[in-house]
Image (cartoon, rainbow, N blue to C red; front, side, top):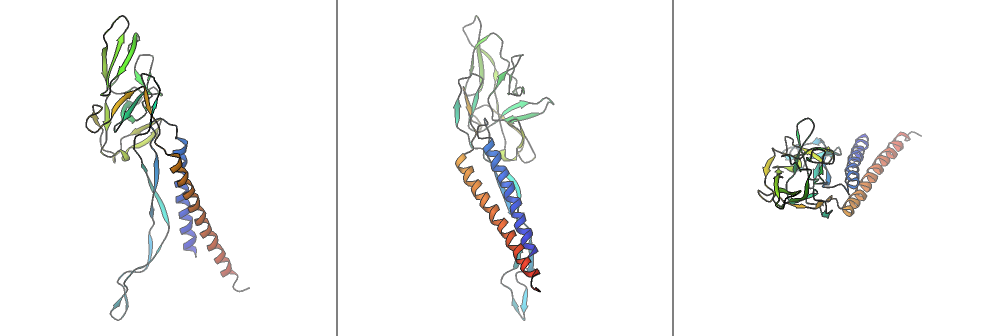
Length: 262
């Protein structure tokens, strides 16, 4: 009976993690470039009362094992990297990636991070940066007298300067690919950092090497599907509820056992 209490309790803990992941997805339903997550679970260690093939008498052997499971556990979160719906903004420094790849930005400590959020801004020095001031890498500097900015699908950036008619090249925006994007670590601020499971970043010209092309004047919306998350929330709630019923039933059976002498 004590085993069933611990098993059901482990199931409740697992479903709490499941609900935490779902709640985070719903909280970021309007976050630019957000990629939804799904909780992953495993069954826990088993108590083997009798092994498969154990002798049951004479030359006879058990055709199956006698095992009792001890619940489930939360083991990780898988990320969904499907492309979100493009949202038109009309802003020349907003960029959506229509395919694979990440923008690379430089953090204050000199390390690089990666993002799908293309809502870039111009800082006081003309550098193209994220909303938190992290410059895109390689750096793109937009002159103060630029009157029109153009970003081509292959990442070439050009601008028409005051008093000129021909566009002047300003640099190229690159995309970065990973062997295993699911191995990237989320650090907040719409940023990922490379980890041991993701592999090293590979620089690509947009539209080449499996990377997506760029679309200026658009942003990539979150790929969270609200209806799917609501269904998963209901399933998590019911799973939590049935595990709590198992705890209650185990407690009732223990109470009956304690009252046998009465």
